[in-house]
Image (cartoon, rainbow over all chains, first blue to last red; front, side, top):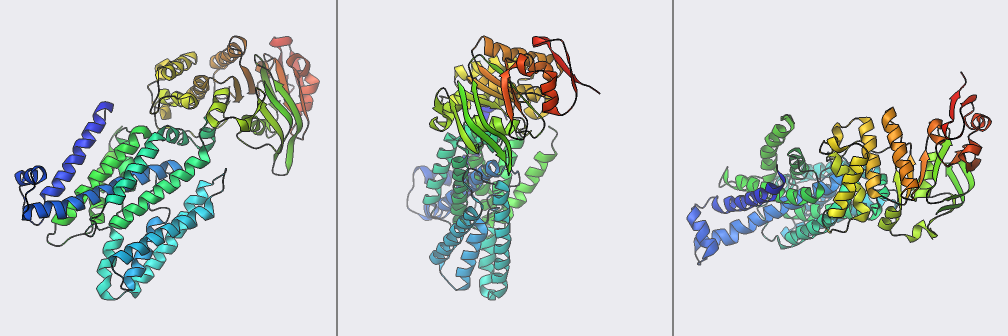
Length: 321
Length: 253
């Protein structure tokens, strides 16, 4: 995509995805009514549906997608591995194990979230402690530690699922597949997204250099150890915030950065903000599908991020350069 | 002045170079010679502050390396790495522009002086026609020239080049040597080249020989580039043709 057009197009897509999220749902609302209730809100059922149900959820979906896609970009730079996605370091596994254990014990939403947070932070700390050596951070060790820990978590998650009583199974599966139906307070996630974008867009020149390898980056004057640690914690925290909001929504962190790279956006100064916008729009759209396709039944959004994302990525991959 | 004092270089338990004292002055062109695995690259990394030496000190312009900020050190002392990963996301011009990283004043992106320095460097290595081409599609020799151009865009006073002539065809080997010579003669830079081609070593001012067993020798090129010394260094018979800066050396088969 040509340079000057990229951000106007992505901003238009973002606005469009939010508008569609407000427009569609079980309760029929017309385009005029959407504009009306945004511009001139009058108390009523339409305003309630838009302001209390759809808008918070659309914003949560957008924040989730933005965080996951940004985390994907950061981890792909850090690990220099195109397969790196936000879940590769065990963050989501830790969070899922925490959440499912809490659900198994019959805990409420607040405690479940707290347990998920504890699990995610625990995973981050374990992976970092086992792999980090100042001055010489072996990223293969980091990657393998994360993958091994994830495997351990997934075994424990399977165990929890087997042990769980029938009644709780569905809630657990939704949690694992990514589900935004309880996501309505996304203020903290938006704050973190803004912070991550601000900090790492400011550092994107260093990201460009680090993409050439740690030694080369040091030869160019990049503070490599500090930047790597910042990338790790930035990506991990972004993932935690997304997972707490919407469970393990798959595919966004891996796919969105690659899709943008395939359309020619490689410079991290543009890739990072572009990924956040594209990832946010993508999850907002996928969640609108998840809410409406089988209405009134709600489906996990993670199913749709994959169903919508796979054909797009396959198309981009098969396209001639 | 680039100063090394009592520098000891080791890899694992092998001491490659012991107690090296070295002073590289502005305007000087040095060749670093030695067998494979004799510690040339490790020494260069130690001099550049990329790897810790086992013992000893390195200072640039009277200041220890550790006293520089990372970016100001790279404005003063630059390295051409022997190997780097082949993958790069952008065009050749994007790649060369990364050499301006330690200079960048603009908060987000580059200013006119960066653009100008990168364009000059691209022209100096004959890369103008390839500037917009994706780095990944360049040949081995073109990449080597792009890496040289990146260092020229970085424009440090002290330059350490690890095998700068690898992958280059004859014309571009010569061109590179001319660029290096011009940098030392006209711009007062100090340059060290790790070389295997002795015809180019004899065009340098000074030579550092690393024997790989802790011994080393440093001195004027004319003095050190003698068949007996080279036979001792490389462990094979060597014959000299010509003398002075035109001297060539060939192994006796």
